[in-house]
Length: 375
Image 1 (cartoon, one colour):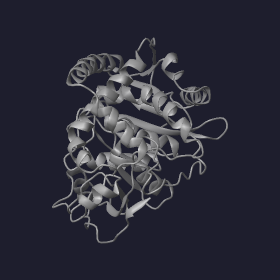
Image 2: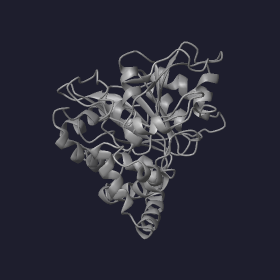
Image 3: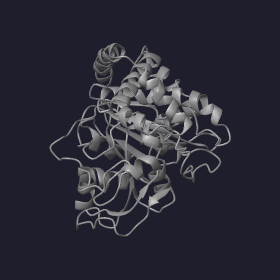
């Protein structure tokens, strides 16, 4: 879980987050530390950072105290939290099941009360998925709303900053302290699609409907039809992600054969085969998807399941690929549209951890988070 639990990390200033312990996923530069991106080989080849990533500096300037750097999926290119080099961080909400990634270590640190805030990236769900799997609150911020400088890049077109907490009020405290005050948005209604809710397994769909019926009573509802090409949009996102990841890291990987575990190595082999023409076509489709999703959300809050299934058992790795596809069908909505998304923890009727995701218009991050505090 911890790659670097060390009190020699940068000292925070006085600010509104004083007293909050910060776990930093090993995908952000921290002054005087090496960034490992979940890979021992990459860590060994890295040099200490001259300065911290802007988001790390911003959290420290607000008073958060860094308590360690946490493990993650290799190159942030998975959603399982399973790392073949460092092992899998625990999932306190379901000990026999995976914890989700890529911010698995930070999520586990928060869930175990070893930290109060977990900082991580969210490209295709790396905050939202572990939040749902581990009973946490998680925010993916509006794409471009916060600098990703000093954050290990995977897909610049999709990469966003996010954080995890155990409760909604801490999530709001961090969000208010970090995000620029000039951005604001009004949320008018709750947008609900029975088809989108049914894109998850029945036990999760039932839990989300229960949430809507018992807690989402403060805003009027808008029923929407589900005719969205989720499978196609997920494929578009994966094409963009693969091409950009290989363009960014292919040279280093080519010079370090055998450095990756089998799953991520296979993913990069597939990424290397994506042609510039396929990438260009995917970019064009992604722009159409972005327009369609933003129009669907409008000034409302779109409610969807965070994940398609409960966390898979650790003993069934063969199920991970199918689970990933179903969940990416849901996470691609906010990712392709560059929209903020908050995952709120739920439990199924059988007591399994899952989540409901609220997706808002651009720069409605603070309003979305504030809404979670009254639900």
